[in-house]
Image (tube, rainbow, N blue to C red; front, side, top):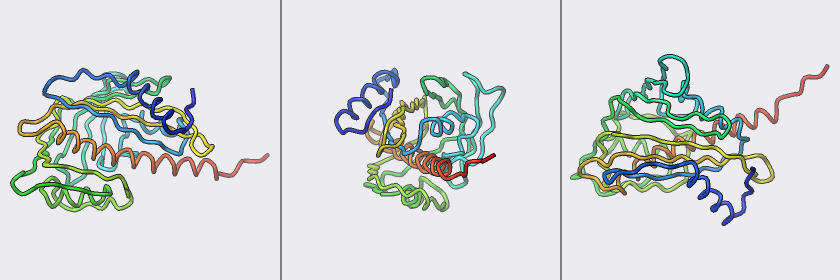
Length: 242
């Protein structure tokens, strides 16, 4: 089924996809959220990136390397190296869902070195309009060590991180689904990513969600950029003639 971009009807379709595919068992000490991205590229291109459990660096800007242990299948584990400067060095992640027919991808963090911590005493609020500005401001507040240039990931959604002190990605899992739709008369893709994660001591659910959502928005913006670039290449490549 291909959804048409039509305001309220599109929102209802998003809600239905979330209700159907993005079920999380949420405990009292956890928070959860869902994010939506509309991409001007066909489903097969977007899904080819999302399903690449062994190559998340194809579109995730904060990943430098990935090594998968064993064959690529449900239960496979990958060791992800995070780019220098971020408040983590490695992330160990397990593939939970991979459905090529329904286009459903799920993963869970099962280990790694996640050291996200911010001193509230020196911080009241944080606002940014781009992934590059996000990384630069997190440098200033001690969440990122060093400076990285993500200016090519211009992201115009307003992100508000309030009193964010995030210590560990405990019990983090996410589900990503992709769905065909029509955007401006062309094949497009609706991407929905949801997550659940423990709320660290000293934080509220809203604070924790704000921070995780900011990182996911950067990933989704990068996914959109890469997918749309591939779509343009597909449309402009010459046809071989006999």
